[in-house]
Length: 169
Image (tube, rainbow, N blue to C red; front, side, top):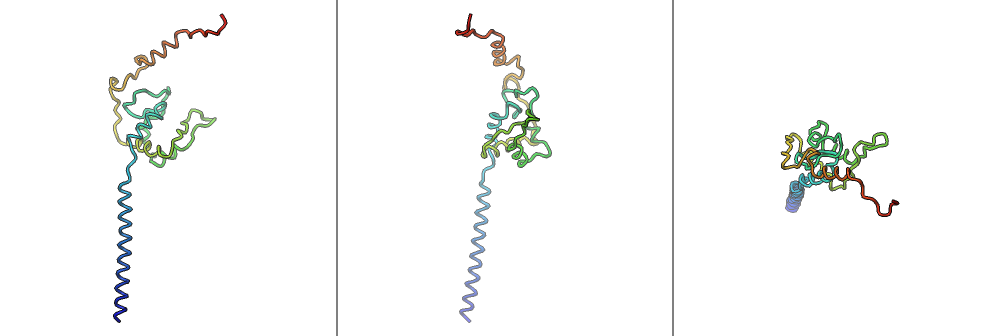
């Protein structure tokens, strides 16, 4: 009878030890999940300013306007669309939209895997936030006529091209 009691006590200790081990694994998993860093919004802004500004206004303090006459949507507009989520942005950014029939659609930006999360986090960081353009003195000129680089390019384009030295006279 004493051996049965010892066996029952051993089983009870074994069950308790297994429960303790499972609990420790769960706590360790939750702790690891809690320590997983959120996507870096600052890195996403840097990436957006590097890759997206030719077509989009990505920030109110963006120093140069998009080169498109009719720019693509601003990032705050994209972020505040009702159907936009991290998953839908990831799918959109990973898909080619330009076709022969629609050559002006957004091209695939060919992001590397680690670039998706920061860029998506930056776009979604504009959800529900006011978009206030900075004063012109801080961001530079918004008018091409007041822009020094624009003026220099236009001046150079009005001057005759230099004569090639090997061109016939």
